[in-house]
Amino acid sequence: MSKPRIDEVDRRILVRLAKDARMSNREIAQSIGLAEGTVRGRIKRLQEEKAIKIMALTSFGGRDLPVMAYIGVRVDLHCIADTAKAIAALPFVRFAATMLGRYDILAITIVKDGAELVGLVNERIMSLSGVHHAETTLAVKNLKYDYRWGRIIDQ
Image (cartoon, rainbow, N blue to C red; front, top):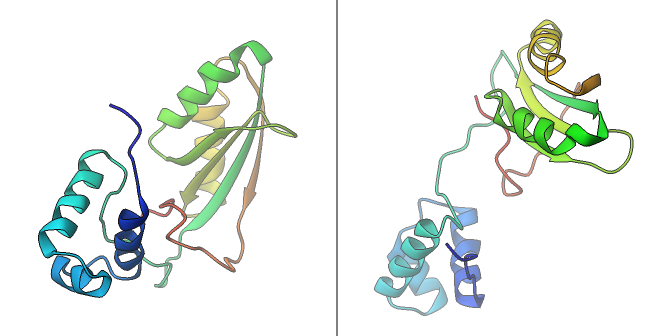
């Protein structure tokens, strides 16, 4: 499948959906001066091309707040690509990337507390081939989380 193409009309549709994903195709069409069928077709194409996915997101509200945890991993140089793929495949990992700088791989996850994080790192990450160090950091106060950037939180 080729890279999804997003033109200016698609962007105008996406701006409306980002503000309110429950907005009807008719409302979107009226707000940008298109036919409802055109809007419906473009949204369907973007979904089929996996350029967008329309979903509900949860907030950080409630008593039992999840904690965002960052895991910086250092690996043997010849293992970085394979280890990064293995970390990205772990079900608890919400984000993974290879890095330049202090860590070879950065993973982000959500945990209920530090004890859960220690268990995940010690049992699941440190046991991977080539891993020789993992450093963790817990977010203590979320100042900003823009859900439009990408969905990391999963409650």
